Length: 362
Image 1 (cartoon, rainbow, N blue to C red):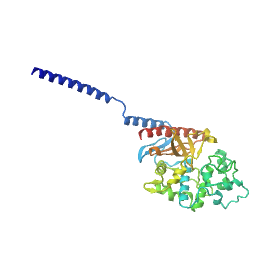
Image 2 (cartoon, rainbow, N blue to C red; image 1 turned 135 degrees about the horizontal axis):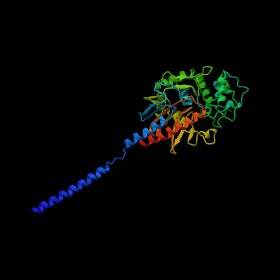
Image 3 (tube, rainbow, N blue to C red; image 1 turned 45 degrees about the vertical axis):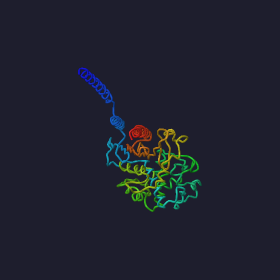
Image 4 (tube, rainbow, N blue to C red; image 1 turned 180 degrees about the vertical axis):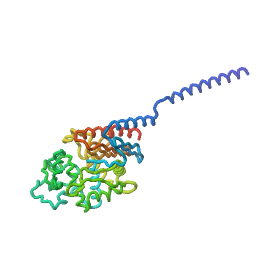
């Protein structure tokens, strides 16, 4: 009997020791290491703090897989602010061209530009103008001997006929040969869309793009002849930009309705021109490229993010790898030097900080 009691006591002691050790191990396994959710919140706070430190940012929206990751307004920005998106307007022109081709108003991007402007006397102009096509316009390879400078815009603004002014520009190279980013190209495109559809560019955009996306009361500047400006001059709300980004993220479908051909999205958002070897390599390195009025940013060596880009940091980025879009609106009333500083800061925020965050957690 005593032996049985002794054995029982020993067994209880052994079991107690085992449970004590197990509890210690369990306690250690729950040591105060940050959970993934805690890390996620910490990283998000870092991103938002970085954004808050940028006095020029007015709005930031990030949506992933249909869910709002964050929406922030600062420095006078708010949800109802219609901000000039500057050259991000060009990506909207790209969408309208894709729709016009689908609808049969434009035959193809290889149509000659001069076919749309029979009212102008072109007999004494550079014969290379007769080789200029829509493709050259949307690839920024028109060949015109002009760069985006204050003087170039002043000369344009002083003209009573912007289309005539542009068509009369000298050529520095044959159309298609060299990349030269020029907003004048897309102003011609806006006039082509008006000529081809029989509607103003805004009327056509409202019918086939803006209203289907739920975008209303768009502000869009016009030239002296009434053409809506093709390279800048559209003012939209942050959520308007987000809707446009979602359209591209979802291959041309918005809320179950097809608006834009999938093939056009694919064709227009792949890199067709790199910046290395061009005048623009001093601003944009080899991680940047250009499609059909869309920029392309490569991150991580093999992930391409097409984005609409406007003066001073306006952005609509489509990050298909993680099913996300990123929108940034900034103060656009700055000079070219300040604009490039804002470009670099916004791109670091979007394509480094936020992109790394999305890749890590989604």
